[in-house]
Length: 273
Length: 333
Ligand SMILES: [Mg+2]
Image (cartoon, rainbow over all chains, first blue to last red):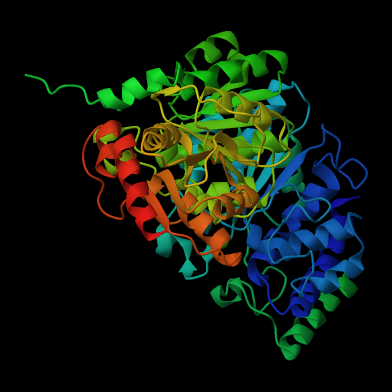
């Protein structure tokens, strides 16, 4: 798929994501929209995993540390054929396997996440297992920027460099917002790139909605002996004008008017494409 | 002048031990590390994760023999559990080893989510558990671990009483498809007599009797056995069970003891809340079995200072203390 084709796909995915959240009556809208392009690139271009190879020992691993943005992950996984799109209608419903955070009940999901600061340590273990087995797979995790205040991330950051895990990639959905407001006001992570560099990581900074930049950062060979962090600068609520950069859309279900307005905007984008 | 080293057994208890023909074993910790090394030599997928704890975990020989199968994470217990879970999710039979006090408190959320909820075949080993660190104080005691882990879905909890139970628990853990927690201390254990070989989820019968039933676990079981032997001299016949599997609990053995015996005493190196005692009480209440009943464990207070032996004696976990508890309870029976 070309960049353009993937971008057009992303418009459809955004519409479906909003539909999932409306159907679930709950969800993390802003963060889902900010990481959607990253997931689109991962599952359509980067990750060596498919519904057919999901139990293959040599598959690439993806662990979504920012588990609260599960609706975006569900949307992309179903688009990729891991489960039927109709399953999305049950998200968060009574007795559904589709919980409001990732679980291994769902084909395509590796670990149960949702408490922050867990994905990176888990991925260190997965990457170490890959090194022990001399297996070709890579391990990816997606972190939120607010999540970086969890100290366990920095325990794992030490270990990633210590064990020279060049089969490990941490992607940071750097949308600069968290539930309370701007991350720099809640608990600043600056200087971000320098921090990761100081921890011994290879750092790549990209526009998290630019398909060429994302693809290059995630597929170009890693620096030998260094884990990679891709700082993806994103916009929380990306693609829906009244949600973009508005903290209250951290979580929240659009009203029927808001949903219609959002769909109209996305339809217009789709039509122009 | 330095204080005399506290002893775990009074001269009377030692004499009784000898007359029973009991033999001195080794610390469960040593048996754990040897067993793990044997297993790991046969199976390269057996890996151990330590948090600057390879010395205290007696894992230096393991590290020397199989450097590719040991992962050091530094003093970072949350990372230890997350990494153990990640290894387990990728085909490794991963053992995360850290002092019980830190492992089950600081990294409880990682145990809950990364191990139990994610259902990976990881085993967590709480070393120097209970009050093994003695006078180092409450930061180093793990008197909460059974309570908090009992409250988590999807983890088997084992507290071995002697070398045999330790060896078997580690072997079972190495092939278990789901999470396990095993905890023990560092003192040398006495080899216990048992009728049948170790079976996960089934209490080991150490002694038969129909007056008092001692339902004990871990390093306290020997004291219950000595109390039972002591009481026999008074015509009181006691049953002693090693409740090595705290979860799933052997409800059948508890109910059998309640049917057969006149009183029940539970014994554990854990706070009196949330551990073996309350678990047994729950089984009995649900079955409508009202028996004279006592939970012997560490009181809900700032734990007294002292060596493990001092602390045991202080809270009545000794031949003398348990004998007294049983006698007092039988008066009600
Ligand atoms: Mg954020």
